[in-house]
Structure formats: C-alpha cells, structure tokens
Length: 176
Image 1 (cartoon, rainbow, N blue to C red):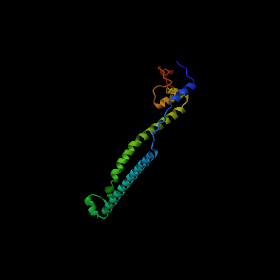
Image 2 (cartoon, helix red, strand yellow):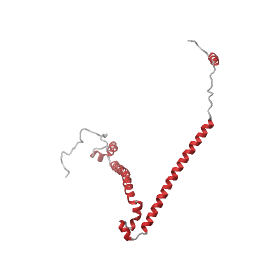
Image 3 (cartoon, rainbow, N blue to C red):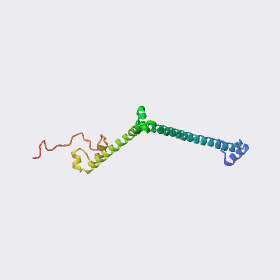
Image 4 (tube, rainbow, N blue to C red):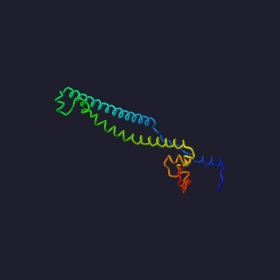
C-alpha cells in the first residue's frame, strides 16, 4: 500500500477539482407558487365556513317561519295535525329526537369512567381499613403488611403464601 501524506492528497485533489452544481434554482418561482397555494387553501377554508354558516342561517330561518305558521294556527287545526301548542318547537326542530341519542351516547361514555372511579374508591377504602389493623388482626385474616397492596389489587400472589394453613392451638375448645 502506498502511503500518502496530506501534501500528496492536496496535490491529487488539485489535478481534477470538484465542480459545483451550477443548476440555477428559481427561488422566486417557488415563493410565488407557495403564495398561490396558501391563498387557494385559505380561500377554500373561508368558503367552507361561509357556506356552513349560510346553511345554518337558512335552516334557522326556515324553522322560525314554520314555528310562526304553526303558532298562528288555532288549537283545533293543531290537534288535526296531532301537535299540541307546547310541542310546536319540538315538532319543527326535532329536539326530542336529538336529546335522547345524545344522552344515551353520553351515558355510554361516562358509565365506564364512573365504574372505574367507584372501583378505585372501593380499593382505596379497603386499603385504608387494612392498614388501620395491627399485625395480629392481619395475621388472623392471613395477611401481612406486605400483602395488603396485592390483596387490595386482587392479585393472587401474596408475600405470605404458605402451603400450610395457620395453626389453631385451641383444639376446638371455646372460651368459657
């Protein structure tokens, strides 16, 4: 292998100098295109908002007109239609049909949260009750202080898992 020093490497590099990329980029064209795309996007977004508002206003005016027409009817005409005067707004706008599904959807979303909160509270109360017991009371129910957290969490493996049950020294005798 030939050993080259820094001076030799510089000389080789000067034999055929690297050429820079001389392709010209029209930066102004890219800037103009970006401005055009941004304007088109904003115009479309504003048009969507405008059309949505226009539709809501038109629907609101149509509902108000229908409510006014029904309000001007007599009680007999309303009963012929099967609508009570107090139900005019609901008949026109469909509030009753809107509220029930909304509440049921809300209930299905909230129910698991309520259940998990109640479970947490129950575990917390159980933990507090077990921590309030002394060592003798805990051993009477087969627990140690180290077992409390696992017992409350519902885990099967406890620190005091003995294969042999606790000894009963009273031989079936009862206190007299």
